[in-house]
Amino acid sequence: MRAFLSLSRAMFLGFIRDRMTLFWAVLFPLMFLVLFGGLLTDQGDSQLAVGQVGDVAALDRMPAEARKTLERSLDIQKVDDEKAALQEVRDGDLAALVSEDGDRLVVRYSQADQVAAARVQATFQGIVDSANLARSGARPGYSLETQQVEDESLEAIQYVTPSLLGWAIAMSATFGAATNLVNWRRTGLLRRLRLAPVRTSSVVLARVGVSLVVALGQTAIFISLAVFAFGLKLDGAWPLVIPLVLAGTLAFLAIGLLAGAISKTEEGAVGLANFIVLPMAFLSGSFFTLDGAPEWLQAISRLLPLRHLNDGMLDVMVRGHGVEAVWQPLLILLGFAAVFSLIASRLFRWET
Image (tube, rainbow, N blue to C red; front, side):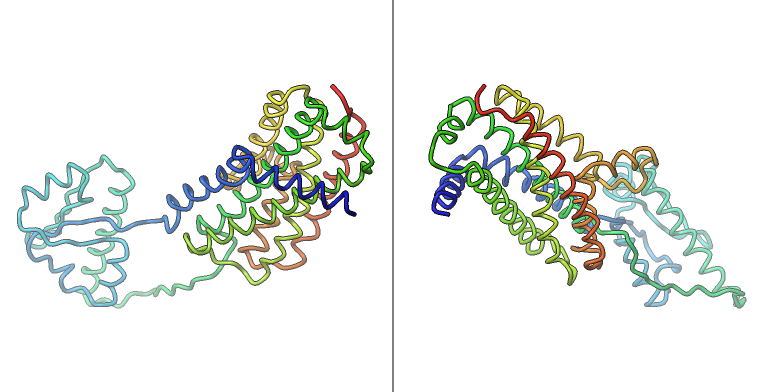
């Protein structure tokens, strides 16, 4: 036990003193979280700025409730200089300029932003239809009832945090195991450990223990930053993410050991680990959702451990699922860990 604790302490201190390792394991993934969180949080159909010239009855006499609903999508600003406002429309500063000419509602817009142009036309067509209906006094045959339901769709930060956390864990465990193994073999540390009065199991357990502690630290940093900086809303079952993180770390640690066992140089280990993790991140939905991907791509994705880690964390962190959503990803990740550990042990060598 004393040898195990000493090795664990030495490995952990080596990790936190290595600035490059800290950067790639913690700061680099956090940069992506800040980037995606800042760009995508509360992203959606933002308000379009629309200028209003003079009095427009269809807007000015709109019922208060309807006006409130309209202002969720349009920021209507009254303007005095029509010519200057038209130039703002051409420049893209205003989405449209609306005025009234007798019984006509005149909307002038630019086609440069086709999405905004379509929204403007659809919105004002609805306003005209409502005004005509109110003027005619005809009673509509159908009514509209709106009801909001919760579904599987997620706001940007809800999706980004678990997915980027999964990628960070995969990258840290794989790169750390691969490069450390090659470096220890190159410097002769493995040979000295083999000759030292220390059990091989203590060396392995110490390395695994440090990796698990690092992964838990990554998880705490990611979740804290996402909650306090970007408004991540955690579900009540979110602590179940801990066993998923531990199982995912074991799986990617085994993959890293395999990469380190095959590689002869640190550069080769980094390249092989990068070749494994980066494509897997894209194919597992770490950077964008795969909901609209073709079925053949979905099938490939389901063969990857990172996909199951990401899906499991999404389910328990933000989708409201409980223990039932954890068992399958856990078993799959532990299965990957066992298989790749067995292969790595067969290819392992103490010296170059």
